[in-house]
Image 1: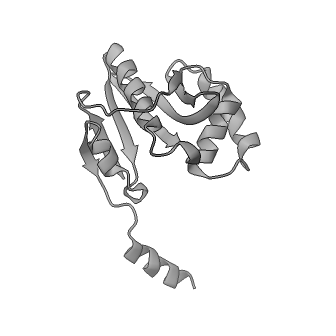
Image 2 (image 1 turned 120 degrees about the vertical axis):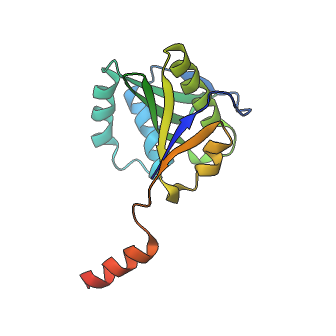
Length: 159
């Protein structure tokens, strides 16, 4: 697990994505599930959770749209002086086109306008550290939660 803090200075060019701050719960859910799971099997369970989250003042869900298509999503959770971003993802057909960068830029603007420090948490296994560093984030904390070596040793004990 790595926690990163945004310096707020760097930004990358990004897609001509429109960022919607009030997406329909089902639309945001589908983008999230497609980006992270590759299917919509959990949609009936996740959509009600997303609908409840949208009612909280401390939460903003961002949806990136390219044309008529939902291209990605991001969640912002606020606490005193901080804005944490989670679930940054692009649907498969819009990856590597700047959608996540557009979402991050909007999240930085929101945090800045509110006077909050922007941070995110990422898993090293996601392979996204370089991506975030290139967009002005810096590592605050890093911890190995599970290594392949430990994982294999644990599996052997279970058998």
